[in-house]
Amino acid sequence: MSDDAPTQRLDASDPDRPVQPGAPNSEQRKSRGLLIALIVVGAALLIAIVVLLIVLLGGTPKPTAAATPIPGTSSATPGTSAGATPTSTSSPRTVVKPTSAPPPPSTKVAISGYSISPSQISCATGTPDLSIHWSSVNGKTAYFGVNTADAQTAGMGWELPPTGSDADFPSGYHPYPAICGQDTEYTITIVGTDGSKVSRMFTVKFKEN
Image (tube, rainbow, N blue to C red; front, side, top):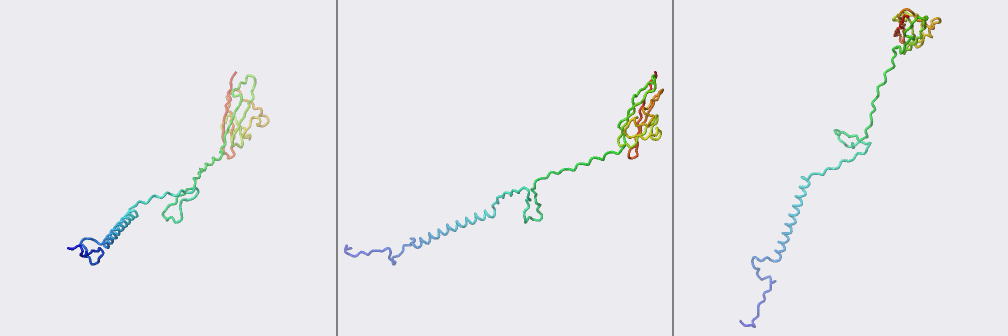
């Protein structure tokens, strides 16, 4: 072949040039890259949706802190269901138990004191005089008697003050003389304001010479 013969130049961009089988052109490469990108994005979206569903359906809700009630107010809020029991947070009040009333004073008559002196006598130098004193509670009238269990019915018949002494005896019986020669019982009987009565006896001993 002569060097002067014209040489045919093969242009890569020649549309009439046959494409070698198995070699992808630029359009095919672009389509393949776009498809791969779409697959990657779709997979990422699918994974995100799955994770979101797991969180929404299977996640444990965090406990919410209970509201701190304000002292003096009720913890019940409007809209509470009928079955809910409101809890009161009001401060406790001291409950004062009522004290039992004292019993009324007794109206029963009683002899609080009765004495005679001397309690032992001797008549060697004459008949001694006796000093007699008595006192009572809830008494109205006193009676004096000798050797009797009830001076009101079998006594001297004198109405005496509920608290007094032989100075309250009638004239001629004060001072009151003792009885010589024997032991003698002297009785004081007190009648109360309610009509009840009580008696007490005092024995004066006689001592012979």
